[in-house]
Length: 153
Image (cartoon, rainbow, N blue to C red; front, top):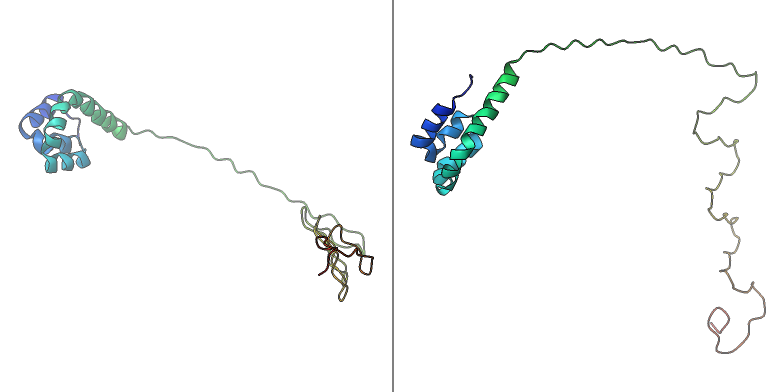
């Protein structure tokens, strides 16, 4: 691939531009196929290319120049060893330390802890808790047309 000439591109545009040959010449195959099947985008695109050809040639030549420049970049990578010291010794009989962020371990047989903000669990067989504002079981409940939980049920 070599640099392209504006004069050659204009000649291709003049004689074969309706078929998009000048666009294929400048390595623009998508628009070349579009021109091929639409007769230069119905003559409008072919006519607009009068102004666009110098810029298209300049873009192609700039890409060609950047592809042919060989630059060598030397990158020096420094690898430093990471020393990990021996873990600190725990006193004899002390439980092992948990990693940072790990939940604490429960002693064997202890009930699991509730998450923060969770209501406490009721023991097995206990009656369910009463809703807020309800009288305790066995308390006096007035008779009459009162809304639940005080009225007849």
